[in-house]
Image: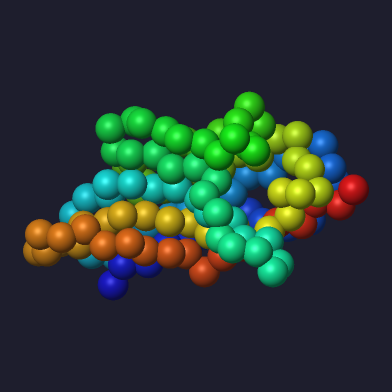
Length: 121
């Protein structure tokens, strides 16, 4: 009923840019938090950036100054603009959201299916 659909992953050269999109859809009352995590092969999933409905944003140190998150609340969509990409940015990127479904007083964590970002050196 509630799902996150990601798009925009792909292969890019180091120094290039990529823009990821994540659309939340379904029986949504409100979205509290949206953000992005990533997981490189053999490593734990790590936070890239999160942003709250109030506008507070927190980036991982490794992406500060290079990545920018933005939201289109009318479309329930979050974007991740990735600039100056490095080989170490290669990972599966997962959209993440805390969403309160309609007719439910609780918020729940949702994950996208992941989209592969590969940066060639």
